[in-house]
Length: 314
Image (cartoon, rainbow, N blue to C red):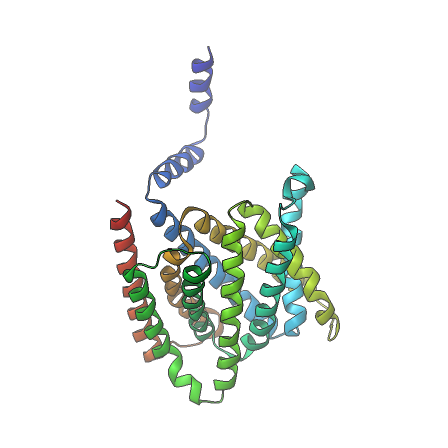
């Protein structure tokens, strides 16, 4: 009777649900490193959409207030999930670690939000690609993750592509802001390394929720120093940022759960292609020739390391 009932339930599943279950089953059979790369690609797409909306809002709202509202939006959109299952289910095992991570991440965000109104979206994304270099070094030094020569080579080639993109801008009027943006990279790397350590005993959902809570709390004092009224449309934008940001960080945490953090970093170089496209569509930022050349180099390095990692796991 039980088997018959199970077949009956399966028969009543919608076609959309059956396709989702089949996709989940096939994805679960992939090599863990390949799964991590796919989670990271999806996270990158969400981050580029988030950065697009954030840059637009930060031209209207002071940077530190914008940082606070972006993470407050994350808390608001996650609140229904917390209320449904109860706060006890979302309490971390290491609340001190969550606040340490929140402090580090909030510091990096303060630098990032200050610079983003002054830099194009593609250059902002390219600057962020220095973060994987710091992550790989930190994972090797502190988490004792293996660094295969392919990962070093892919990171080096990808970083060379980034230099092709941002190098000509460092001598222009925006050079100072490029350097400010670069200063956020080691802070974000430290934050992500702490996240990787937390995934050993915390779920991805708990880490994402407490990142939103801690960054919101820690950002509030500085946001109040230069507060300005927020319109309904801007509130809607920050709620959308909350959805995109929470989704992106959740996808990123899933990649950290199934694969070495250093193995997933080369895929982040693909974000430059998405950022160049969104910058052109939304802000009319035309990609330059060095952006296109650097993007091709970055994409080539990404595809190469993805194939190498898949062969290594097979």
